[in-house]
Length: 206
Image (tube, rainbow, N blue to C red; front, top):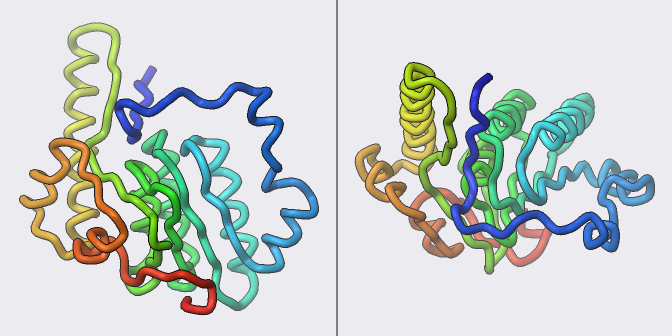
């Protein structure tokens, strides 16, 4: 059994209770889903997991069947690394038509997803915050298994750091140092760092 590795804030609060979730409008309800489909918009809100990866992949593939840009709006604290990998890779798979828009916070695996879009297609709203850091993982079992999984975490970290360096233009060593601890950036800081291409205040700016 492989451990489930996550990219999320170490101090993040637990998920809302079911009764609290029930009060919020469901973005996948028929009417809202139709409106999102018409506008070719994908919402990535909340914790990244396999269910989200399946839904987002299906939406991206459906939208890719016809011409036009695809808008992806991200507000996520992070989550399951491999699920984030899937969404990141699917964004690349459907081509450079994906316009990525960050809002709220774009953290950890959420930031990895955000970097799936080409740099010129990465936007954010003014009060967006970004968080980069190394993967968190809990491993249990025999000593040999713990050693193997610890090595895998190090490989994963190196891979994610390389991706950040390539997509932002920052030196690899600088990204290593920056992600030793939680590395927070506001919108303007993220733009200077190379994460964000343009800070926008309206849809007409895309």
